[in-house]
Image 1 (cartoon, rainbow, N blue to C red):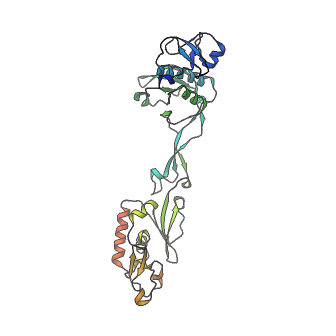
Image 2 (image 1 turned 135 degrees about the horizontal axis):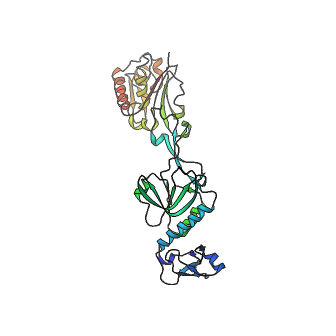
Image 3 (image 1 turned 90 degrees about the horizontal axis):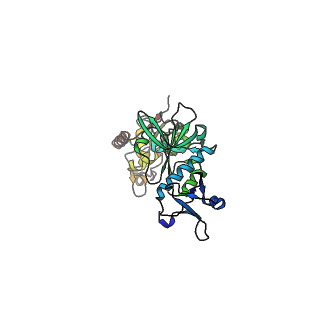
Length: 356
């Protein structure tokens, strides 16, 4: 902080009480620096913001800021009935243990808990108090005493220039660390509930995980379905629809995986139809026929016999069910099944066959 930006808003009166500059202007009297103890005077002009100034040389502003932060937060905590804290907890899909498609980055997210009142758990606090745990002594900037004496205290730490020591963070003691760069930051703490941010660090709090339905998450899948009519279809579904069975055979893969992994002849549809044909030998589709070719440019299948025998040129439909020229392409099917098996070795897949 530049020297001309430093404004000392607080000073101690003769009774060692911390007084804000506007109150000091109204009350009058002598004032002293909370940090160095030297005398301070009120500067209450019309050009600059009102502030205290040292009669002699200024002391270290960071040390002053740390000192008044301790005192103001102490008074705030002890004199208020509600110190609200919001924690961050993991929200996890309730089917995570039974779902083959569970992935932490998709099926789990961080949410804010409901605000709760710290004063229900910690009655009061004191400055610069020692606490011993596992034979190690720690000093808290502010030590908050638990309502239940069997519980550990809460540490409130103030970071102006130096963050909390690693030994203290690793102790398991619950710690709230406030990052304070100006006197305005102290006002922000006092006037708002406590919540993790660039200015608020929370350590060793362990909120309970929340388990929610799949509807709360954004997992999409490609589901291939063989219906009772023996026609096939690929649908994009939400994970909440995974167990909604509608067909005779269903093959499901994550939506984000289908495009990069199956980019050949017909993509996932033709791959899945070849796999489904293993479970039902009566299945027919043009993509399984040896007269079928795939136009990579236009993105659909073509029947090679359409000029000679007048078959439907677009062989992407289920014409094979009634086509007298359909001939199974065993080699092509085996290649697609092999490609699918390779995919399954690297990715979760759900294959469901309707019970007979």
